[in-house]
Amino acid sequence: MPPPWTLDQYLGRLAQGASPEIAEEVIRLGRNLAAASSALRTLDGLLASEGDAYVLQGLGFVHADLRWLRIACDGMSVDARRAVCARVPARRRRDVIVAAMEAIRASLDRTGAPSGQDVAALGHATVVGAASILDPVAFEGAIDAILTPGKPGRRCAVPGNPPVRQTPHIDDPPAVWRSFVLALFEAGRPRPMRADR
Amino acid sequence: MGDVPEDRRIAALSAREGLMEVSRLLDTVVPSPSDTPMVGRELAKTRATLQALLRRLELYADMGAADPHGTPPPVPLGTRPSRGLG
Image (cartoon, rainbow over all chains, first blue to last red; front, side, top):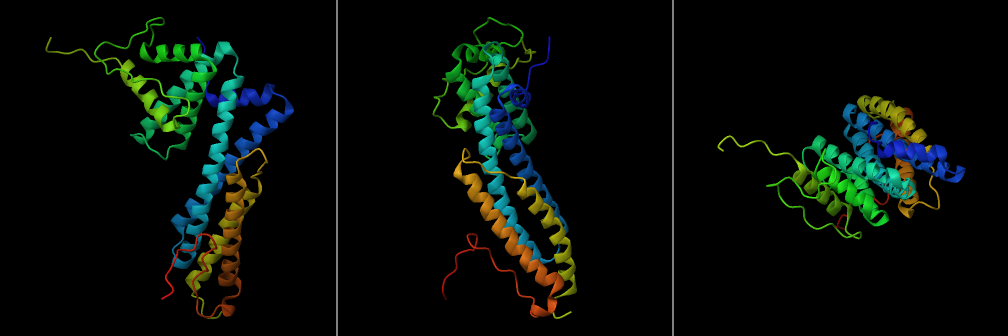
């Protein structure tokens, strides 16, 4: 069984197979985000190595502006991901949605807790929300895959696990969708056997 | 070399080099009319702040005598903290 495709792989495929206009747009968005991130890393290095207070103060102003620029570029990346969801072939959409959900869980695992500043996770959450409207069947299939891993076709979560609350509305912010995805994983997580029974 | 502290002059030289790299990276950011206005706005603002700092670092690094008291760099417009008139 081939490994599930990641969203970034889909972005790459989209750029390869799409019309020149779309390909250039995807490449441009990726390049903008990479440049802003790289500039921010360079500033981080300067801030860590400089010792003069006046120079540090000036670097701090540039750093603050760069952070906003990266947030803006991230926002465009979210839009690109949403567009990807609309262009994925129907037979692959379920995999894309599951990949987005897995990415949300992975990003939170790295930080240890949900963070309002985790822009990447919010971008994936946007895809999940868009998918719920674009292809409800694939969306339900992805939920099944999370709730009952390895048991396709089962529609109930693991017995005894917390219930998953109602699917958010498409207009709900990405943070709400992210919480929804986390609740799905929690509901589908296998419980350890109890020793006192 | 004027009254600009030598440590500051060295720091300015070092920071200027890194900021030139940042400037080159910013040159590769290409906003488009299809982007949200925030992208172009933040890009212009970042460039302005960067250029203001580079000009100040030039003074520290190369023209120390022209800045005899080592005055702090001016706060870029838009990021200046509000202060009372008193």
